Length: 467
Image (cartoon, rainbow, N blue to C red; front, side, top):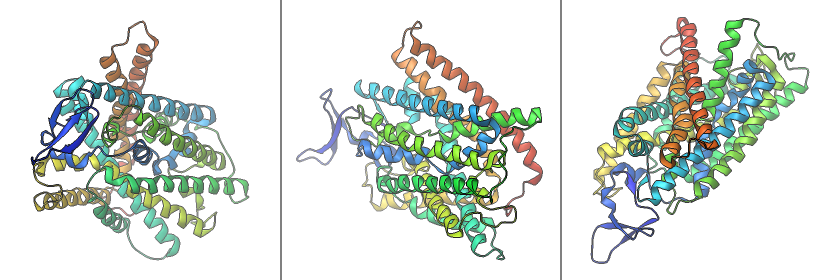
């Protein structure tokens, strides 16, 4: 279930009602109705490498990159830049390893469409069912909740800028953003998001340019704060600040859905994912480094958790033209909606697998009704959590430590070593072992730092708080 034969295309045989998938590499026939509804309807393999580039960019280059100057504030210039470079190199390497492993299994006749399918085949069924599947769902659904909350916060920022004396609460803006998500969630398949994700790519570049330009403008004027790049003098604060900063950088590069994105590519898939990753990491290099360096240069250790917050002084007075802040927030809100719907795809796939009938038409009443109901409930639950827990960012940091670290840094190198079995004397074997060990330890440390932050902020937690 959930796998296709390599280099395959669906065709309709004359005089028959069922479709078959023809494998060009092995000349075998596989009935398409062997696929479950999640693989058949949500993970359609119709895209090109360009489309995979759009999906990858949307899943990685997201508004959390606006937190990078804050991470630099705990690391300083040298450690900050080195951490950012290592994050880019290791994730580009790891994502390519996953792609190579997927291509290898596809060539052998097992095209895995989902992360848990991959884990089932390489590590065994229990790993896929009880570890990889659950943490991927937790990470992706947590990202949906986090995007919904951040979307509501950006809407509230616009509202207060235009009407500072009005009284609408944060949870009301979260609900409004959830309404937008309710519509986007009905897009039938991952492949159907290709045009939305092209727009998302343009938007992430747009708000990154705005963040960079705004930081340079404020940093070059007398309006900005006095530049101070010193680290905290308190040892405990400094140490945990470093752990938290490393976790922020690592999770900013996080993806968690590489197999699902590769599943959207029409076979043969060989080499296509590498091209898509090159598109993505071109955008990553331009956006991540420009925002991180300009933001830290302008605001130093006063950089806020979201750099756009630094565009207002302590009294709420804009340090850049008001229209500029409005435009940047609008770009951010629109891209957040695209990011959220991308990370909703693993949930949609599970819902489709559970409630849809693969033997009925994708747009038959039998499948449309449960699809609309289940996806709507999924969005409503995510919106409710975001509205109730405006401190969800603290919780999401812990989810990211437990989820993104193993999915994006540890498992790819483990999969590669188990699949290709490189010699223990080869450099690639020890490079992969080193990456697995180092980032497993960093994941544990990041989780500890996240739990500490939750305990520090616990006194301020309040359901439906207006923060």
